[in-house]
Structure formats: C-alpha cells, structure tokens
Amino acid sequence: MMAVPPVRRIQVLACLLVSRLPSSSSISAAASIDDDDHPFHSLETKQLLETAESAARAAGAIISKHLGCSNRPPESLQGSSTDGSQASITTQKYSIKDVVTQYDKEAQAAILDIIQSTYPNHAFLGEEDVGAGSQASEEALALRLDQSTSGRATSKNDNESGYLWICDPIDGTANFASGLPLCGVTLALVHHGTPVLGVIFDPHRDELFAAVRGQGATMNGAPIHVTDTITDVKDAIVNAGCPADVNAFASSMRGMLALNGSCRGLRIMACSAMTLPWIACGRLTAHFGYDLSSWDLVAGALIIQEAGGMVTDLDGSAYTLKTRNMLCSNGHVHDRILDVLKRADAVSFERAT
Image 1 (cartoon, helix red, strand yellow):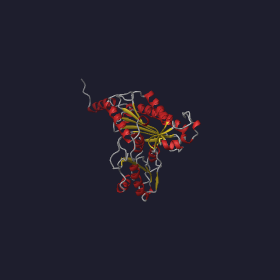
Image 2 (tube, rainbow, N blue to C red; image 1 turned 135 degrees about the vertical axis):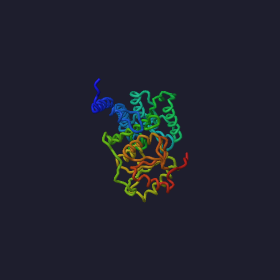
Image 3 (cartoon, rainbow, N blue to C red; image 1 turned 60 degrees about the vertical axis):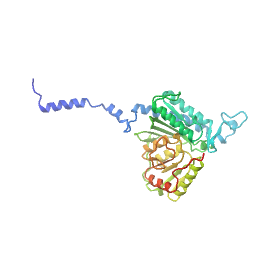
Image 4 (cartoon, rainbow, N blue to C red; image 1 turned 180 degrees about the vertical axis):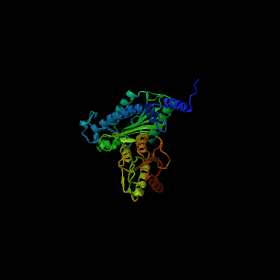
C-alpha cells in the first residue's frame, strides 16, 4: 500500500473535521439559546412572541373600547345592571384603591383563550383569578410556581410542561376606569421559575414592548435601550409607587421627600405596566415601588434587564419572581437611589392590613 504523504494526511483530516462541523442553520438555532440555557429555538421564540402579542392586543382592544367606563352613563355601558347602576362595572376588591371592572375579567378571558388555543398544556396565573390582598397574591404565585416546577397538576390550569404565563390584563385599573390613558396589558412567560419572555402593550399609543431572555428588548420590533446619558441622579426623572397599604405609602412618601432634593423630577403614575418599559426605552430613569404582585413586575423587569437596565429589591438583593419591593433603573443611578432610600428609612415597611 502506498504511504500517504504527511501533507496529504493533514488535508484529509481537515476535510473530515469540516464535515463534522454543524451547519449554518444548526449554528443559528444553537445561538438562539442564551447563556441561561432557556429552552427556545428561533421558531419557538417567534411563535411564543406572536401568541403573546396577539393576546396582549386582544386585551388592549377591550381597554381602548371601554376607557373611562366609570364616567359614562350607566345605560351606555355593556353589562349595566337592570336598575341602571354601575355596581356590575366597577367594584372594590381590597380597599378603595384596589378596584376591578368587568372589563378586567373580559380582557383576561381574551388573553387566556388565545394562549390556551396555542399552548393548551401551559399553566396560567392571572390577577383576576386571585383573591384580594397581598397575601392572596403571594400564595397564588407560590402555588403556581410549585406546580409548574414540580410537575404536579391539580387543575385544568396546571400542567407538567414547566411553562407558566403570568398576566395582569389591565394594569392601572383605577386609571382605566377614570379615563386616564395610563394603563396597559402586561404578560410574561416563566419556564421552571425563570422569566423567559415578557410583553407589555400600551393600546393608547399602539406601543408593544417585548423581550426574550438573552435576545434584547424591542418596541414595535425596534431595539430599545435604557438611557446611558443620565449617570447622575440629579438629572434623573424618577417615578414613585402609590401603594394601597398605608404603611407602604408612608415609606414611599419618605422616599419621595428624600429624593426630591436629589433628582430632577418625581412622578406618580400608578401604572408599572407603563413606567417600566418607559425606563427600558429611556423616557424615565428609575421607578421604586412597594408590595407589588408578580404580575405587576415580571414582564417589565425582564424588558428593563434586556434593555441594559437594572432591577433589584429595595434592600439591594437580586430581583426574583417573589420580589415585592423594587427599584428599577437605567443602572447608572441605581446605587445612589438605593442609598437615598435607605437613609430615609424607605426600603421596607410592615403591612398595616
């Protein structure tokens, strides 16, 4: 047998090596999985985003149609009671600051219908399925997370897929009922306890904010990023929370008083579905809030993180799905705001109710 020259052997080995490399399509598919090993390939991501966007827009259509429902003549409202009262339109849940309308329920039903038609084996946690009060929302989240991560299915909304959708169909219900266009839809997908997709829709401006873990954040498909030009808190516009609990509200006011002399401006918009993506696209610099439920934060937190911002607990610890007191920011002013709030005794509170 003729011996193969050394140079020829190298060429043969090189050809064999190249033949075993992945194709460009498989490289692209692999690249769609981020460093946190989330389970999406590009086609899966596309379908999930399309489903989330369709669901958010369906709920947004209900918001647009019924904005200001509490200010309209009873006879003009769908679902008014026979005596002409508005009792069936707007009701109090836990306190005078915590109200719900029949349209919250209609919007959630529209979201759930779209998700279940595409992903019937995914679990779902919506605000309108949960009892009133902070404890009820904490318990509902803990139960759903336990079921979605353990694989124990106990009802039609539970499953063994590990996927859990978390949604607030109308965030800013009081604003919505009063006719203030500061309300929106917030929807997130969690996989085995890790947020992997978030969508927030503002139907009044037709702005859809979205993020997939490891793939950045967008508004109406265009990439967005937090502002990097504001690096000093004195130039920051900061939104403060307006919690229902009186002790939480007192903490928020202490924080506002302390920040008032340190930052350019303070706002209270009472709608995290709007303020969080506004941080992600640079309209606001920071937002701090208290006693928020998972559906208030999860989508917006992911959008901010994917836009280059920062989200933590007010005590400085890392954000998790169970975080209820939070600071979101562009990152540059984060530590300074945390320091101001800490010195003002505004990083925690004891529930009054």
